[in-house]
Length: 449
Image (cartoon, rainbow, N blue to C red):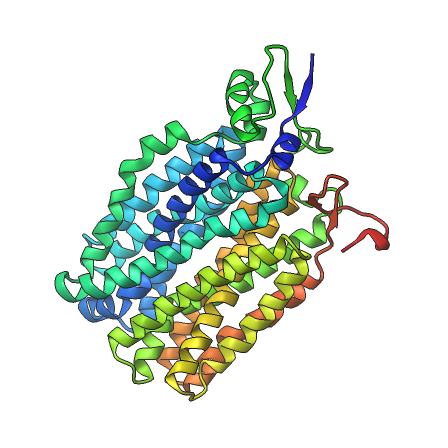
């Protein structure tokens, strides 16, 4: 009888058709997720005009989805380690598709906020699950690249929202871009049937036949035998509460610092996603021009995510993140300076690369930091706690906009969290295991990265 370490097998596998298909499905889900998230920022000026709401009230309307995202990330990230990741992903897909479409049928701020809150449960819940999914099944040598490639779909979704929004809002009204978001719900049965479940879940529930079917597709060199026994050779793979284990094995301080980094980065991301169009329009740019800034922001995010992932697989991912957060603080601060339009587009692209792109690399970092058995829980809690920054951002910036402050001061307020996130990442203690995986532990100082 052979004992197969399923995570080691996935770590050492070569990239193949299985990984490409998994990347496709996970990226497609993130594209839908990114569209649903960005569509409010695109339509916000039209919604404010149609419903007659002021900037501060609009900030609360945007933040209703972010409150849902916080709860969804924590609850649906944690529950996935119990019920299986595929079930959790499908539930999230249905939530954000159906209720984003429902928001387009509302006519008052309260009902809009309720629909966006329910959609937010799915938007927030799906992120930790697809990150954990790609982290588990990706070959170790290209793990960060795979996760960030997948998450670049977030930027594609944002650009799609800007492109669709520019045409549809002018011709059919802001409601049309929300109704279009209901279409991905049709793919839920397909994803449920085709996507493999979490390795830890399959091992824990004794799904040996399922593993014998999946693992040869992951690694063609593996030939299954009926007597094979499957396991996860992780020190803390089974014992204890998933939430308590986020603070075990020397992870306490690093977990808190990771939460702070998520909070600060998500503050920057959602401040820009929610208010960039309005701020640029207020600075004298037309609606079409302001929407073009959103396209540039998300294009930059895609470049930053893929480039950041590529760098993270070749250098220390922690050091890559420190540099990216520093770039975020600098580039956002400069957005309020009067510069030629071409330079402004470059700065917006750099801001996208170093905020949305950095957030994606931070997800990859969190996915590698936590062990397989609590990976969804770890990412979910980091994302969930970070969502409080996302909730505050539209409200805080909305308040600043209502005070008619100089443009530069608005952007400096968005940039300061980048400095705090950079300092938090500096305090995270990580090491490499003998297998080359990222981990944390109370080791001698020489072993700490």
